[in-house]
Length: 608
Image (cartoon, rainbow, N blue to C red; front, side):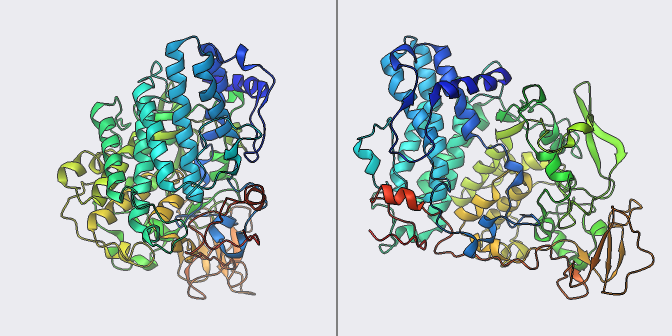
């Protein structure tokens, strides 16, 4: 894969895939009569699918669970979001490459096995491409062939999400039937298992989206579903079936060495994706200069997003009881509130006694060097630790120098998708819990979830899901949030559950009982010196490790001179439920194609 990634650059030069709208003519310097013939031709041409379509920064998503000191416009919403002239996710160059390949394979390929395999791969990625479009825009035009300059589909209107989803299912089912089971144990190329995992993911998305977005069935809604559209349960059942096939027949299991205090952290820090759990991963490597920024994101001042207090509060205690049932939980200080919690919390953020992962001869453990919370990085006080590389070569802690693999599909997500689909269907019982959620809890050293669990009042507050009465749905959502923390799912989870309003709620960090000096992690270093203007304590240390903060000037607390830290106090957040569940179609694209209707609530000044 490392060599293949280098080769894709050459392929990209040979074949120009346009990145603008659908009215561009083919841009190829090679005649199709001399290409698309062999497996090598097809591999070279399809390599860019991985590079162009798979996400490489899953660790940096912002949501109600993770906030940056400079939140993104997507999260702030309101006037920060507007109809762009171009871009905004409405790009089709990768689809053109996919359709070009699919058009020429049956005409040119002389290797029948390669023709089937790369047709399957192309259809897998076409479905992958369209899933991103449906999440963003809802209805979009379905294009399944290479467009010429006079093709009538250049003026194609938006097809219904039902039509798109049915085409995606056809594509992914073909991929499931025809992709290889494995590539010699390597996890860097799409297999039938990756196609099944993807099917479970997008069918769960669509099933829950249809369940909670009732406007799709309102006759007055501009993009209502057609009358013959499949119901939510139909998609949920497909999701459960796809996940179950992996669970029953696939070669995967949760990565575990029997060390619940370590294994979850190693899963994301290890240099090479753990093949027992990884279904599809991106192979990062410093030798090929293909790297990402996860480590610097967590440890360099001003770069990363950090956990919010509401999310920390949602983690259970290590014995399975609720933290929010403890007396005085709202006003606990950092060291007390993070003690004896679900072990995944201590492997996702820095807590007292934190140490980085280290590696020796392929074996991972914790370093003997303890590292405290860096207040200059901890926007909320809860500093990110997940995805941080082993400490063996600190020179690679710099910007864009991380080379630990990132997983796109993993078995842990499959288990969660299965459990959620069954819960939404009302079919999640103890047997289903024991083969999904409770396997994840076993790895973490947590007690099992029981089907007779009572609804958690904290998860039914306005901060979470006040309209959900099913205790198992609540617990599955908690488990999903904890297990998939910082893996790029939360924003779209809120969109499909119709809980986008959570993005506009206050963002809080650690609790401070008043002015003073705080060594929140007990490492002997003062992290925060908080004082009222003109009253700086003589006990404060004037060094770079301490954040000196003036109340109501450089720090804001929820109760004036005490309370929860408000890291983004002066930023206005908004969420328009009529508008913000979907992205707008860019102005230039609507001008080129008058048949493209705009999404509800977005005013671009065009009237046709």
